[in-house]
Image (cartoon, rainbow, N blue to C red; front, side, top):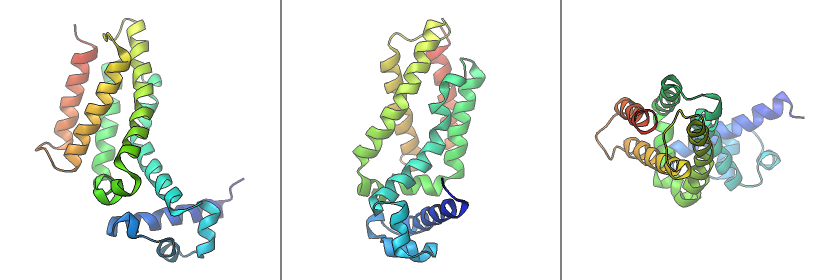
Length: 194
């Protein structure tokens, strides 16, 4: 059973790591720097993480999980326009609130450490399954029009991910709000209009 102190210690290590990751390349951050900033002994680090890599993956997973929570729970959303809007609004709000963090996660200094392909394949796969299931259920209920739910889910997840990446990295001249409005309109046309 986790004690309050152990939860606080792990959180302190993750927060110290985030501060350091925002300042410099992930590969340049050491366990000693993380523990010093967190105010714990270096040996304590290994009670919570097997290695720095384990901390980095845990850190990335926590940040991405908060962003993806409504997508992962699509089954409970139903098939209304309001449900689609709520998911898109959450994604946009989270990214806007955490823009410096999102930028750091997308920069070479973070992607390069974990491997962009590793990160994307892990998260794309995690996202595609619930989206595909949601589309399939909507199709079976006659509420969503999609010939191939699995393809459509993969297409949507990859397309939306790439659009978010491009806005985060300022590679295209759109804001998150504009992206959100266009995404809502596109999802409605794809699934609900015939």
